[in-house]
Amino acid sequence: MSNSSNTVLQGWMPESDGRGTWSILWSCLSTTFICLWVAFHPNVPAATDNQWQIMCHRLQWVALGALAPEWIAFTACEQWSHARHCRNRLQTLGYKCSLMQAFHVVMGGFYIVSQDKQKTYALRWDRLYQLLKDGHIELPLKEESNSSEWLLSDRDIQDRSKADELAKAVAITHVLWFAVQCIARTAKGLPISLLEVTTAGYVYCAAMCYCLWWSKPYNVQIATKLEVKSELPWNKLTEGLSDRVPATLGQIGPEFAPGSFSSNIGWPISICALVAGFGGIHVAAWDFTFPSAPEEVCWKVAAIISVAWSGFLGFIMFFIDFCEEWLERYAEIWLPFFAVSYFIARLYLLVGAFLSLRASPAGIYDASIVANFVF
Image 1: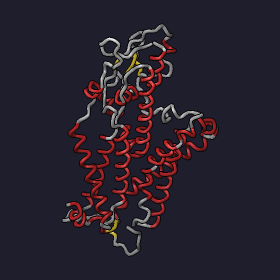
Image 2: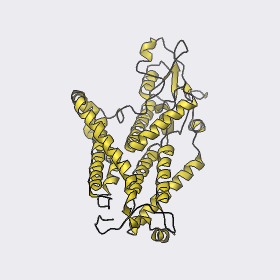
Image 3: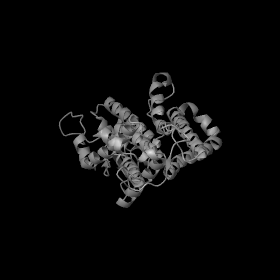
Image 4: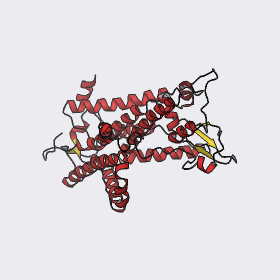
């Protein structure tokens, strides 16, 4: 839809034979909620968390996803990378480890209890690997002699998972229907609303997360206790650990370390580009019709900032070993500038999408051609 002064703008449209404003709002809001709620795979909660704390923690991530869904996508990229690396490392110790089992480790599936039985410590995968390597702990294995298979199999992990296949099917069907409508409208030359463009960005990030977390157990709430075998001082054993594993460790996989830059350059650049794709979808609305000229300028500037900062943040987190000194030296300058500009840009893209419904091209309410295209 090209921006033109001759385009007829329509305000609030009641429900009719086509589609009204309420239809667009319901479609976009329900699709966005499904993307934020179903696609996000939380880590194992702390052993002491009750259901209310678990729910609040998840709602915090949903709120973060509403404002910065590319951050959730980046977290999924990071966890997938760590799970692959964890699987490979555990296999070097002689353990048979699937990607699902590795994800279970990465998401905090194992913990140890303090000597006084008062505190629990969730094991990050790198710490678990080191403790296994040094002989301080052992993974529970099957009883068969010389078995290297975990007692906690993929099926056991799936049993702990709270995934509802019917809910997933309904969610995927709903999101696919939204995508089909947008594709049909574009193919037939019908305009789509800015709110639908924003929703398409959430669908994009949710699809990324779902693919990367395909093997990650969904909503597991029970971790496995491991017994400590060594006499290592407890403060050394639990140094840097807490009652839960952080969702992000700040770097995509330990394989991205100094000396391996050239051999891994294609992978991190690709992921940065994927994460920046959320802002890129907003840039795709460059020639759309906006309610006013100032809103058009603000949208374009905000979309560019979203793309630029997503790529920049991803690049930093991939190669933090190379730029850590620079980041610390200039943190007081770049960090506030990044946070404020990114927050304003994302907030405007979200609010501006809703405000645009007060004066949108009348064609966004035409649904007859879409019905013929689909059916």
